[in-house]
Length: 316
Image (cartoon, rainbow, N blue to C red):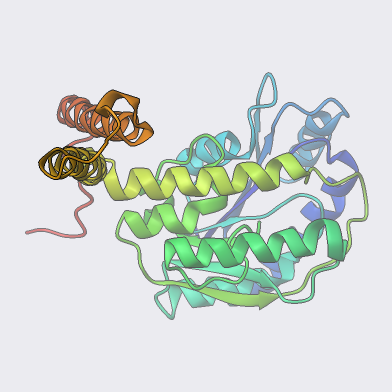
């Protein structure tokens, strides 16, 4: 099979017929063998019934229905396991992405050898203040932290080599960072393609301030885990050494200051009455706690079933 198109959706009943029609037309015009996996993430507007109706008319349509809303990452995880196409596409169901982009992105993966081709909505048709500006800030931060030069990392339209989606695990809210997950798994050939973007025709956007804030927090979590997940002592150890040394130097300073004052018969404050003493004591305690956290992290990492899991590209 050439292509799998994965469409996660929540309350998108009105847009599904047009989306299916456009996908089918693109596949027919280009002679692709394909499947469309629609994942109903707990819709209550009749989206599932619409999926069943479309599937009765087009055998390439497959459906997954969640009992409740689990989120986009859960939808992609289940669909990735089911996907059979050599190139796997993800696409939102709101008709803001263009299925007509599929042939060129397919060629970039199959002919040019890219692992991931991400869409780049150069001219977004969204509210400039509430969506475009936060998106630009988010993507600038993501590029800085991940080192992946994508202008629109969270674009719903992406094309993946089949091996990529089979080797990564999408969980929580990490669907925003699939290129980063892929990079950490060894798939470094990641590029982008300028794509068209349309205004939403039906329903309402699920974007909100909470998703914007959560996106930054998830990015920091993913960066920390990918950097220090298997060697937590590298983070906690350095932090512990620095904090402990700061406290130790402060303690030495207080003692030396007291001895100098005594030697010159100058008045001095008792050590326990100096705020600096308590700061030094606190720094030493925090340094020790960092070390203990590092040791516990190392013990957990050593007992993890993932500690010796590596992606092997080829062997003979």
